[in-house]
Length: 454
Ligand code: TRP
Image 1 (tube, rainbow, N blue to C red):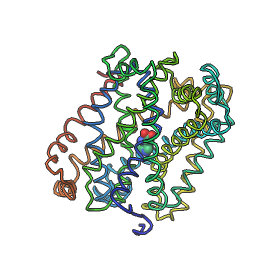
Image 2: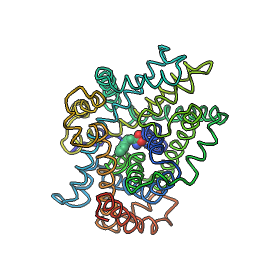
Image 3: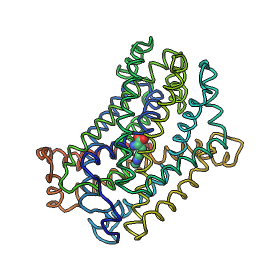
């Protein structure tokens, strides 16, 4: 078992909130949310997503932080310590570690795209291009095995350097600076986008009542995304919670993290869709949305090159503060359960994730191996990993967490942990009710529906 020094702790409570918000705010908010909103027709999809965040995501976030804080362990150890050795609940912890591997392996590919775009912005390769040429740049990148592999490897290297440096000196220090910077950059972009002709249509698209494209699969997607964007369902928040001050306010912290995360996601939509609509681009442009939209908007501006460099660099940082939380879960598992030193744990798991990402890096280039397999999966490897992890593994992990805290965890311990340090103790009953009834029943319905049983 690792001692406290090897495990680490946050320097301050604010540091915890920023690091956790750094984990939550990432590509999920700026890259994924706008594009799946586009694909699912806007409006109602956003509403369902907000409902999932408030009623399912936030209670589970609090549950995870409390579990981590009570056990002082990462997921596998936490479930073991709080149930019993050999109990089936421990597999919920292993599911989390597996999900971390799967998610980071393709997350790093998209982060690599952001690195590539940062480089293209610096070198001026994006300047003065019209919409079509900007679209072609993304197409080229998407299909190139070499570029995808190169940037993927570089991004994994960066992530490993930070996790290697540990909780306080690595993770917390970076999040403190980079999170606020990203927020300001988005606000600045918003100021510009408000005066675009597409702003009105964008507002209507995101907040108006549109249900044309909504299907049962959209509901599962909204649910899955609420887990993805809040970093829930695989023990990342649990692990961060285990470094949290025992007297800190976990309830208020959850609310703050959820609010920040949602604000950034909506902000990203309000920046991207005005651009999309003003340039006659499809709202359902798919994974290329942000990578085409931003250069289109900024290409025409006087300081476009500088601005797009800043934007994509910040996107890389937002991705980095999320990626480190994913790698931290696999690393903490080896530290806590196997007694490995942090550096070895980081190096080994980081390398494994990088290798697991190779098929995703090659997904866009159909010429390479795996095309038969990709056909059988019904989507390419990259999309399959994303689908598997966000729509199934995370909601399942989240549901197990809710059931564990709602029914299995010692009642006195549960109440004591919730009440300690919080000024929002009156929410205890409501929180427990959501975890026990609404979350499992609601999620079971969504699962059954997606499986075609209902
Ligand atoms: N929440 C991050 C994002 O929106 C991604 C992420 C980081 C994540 N850690 C996670 C997703 C843990 C699921 C689980 O980009």
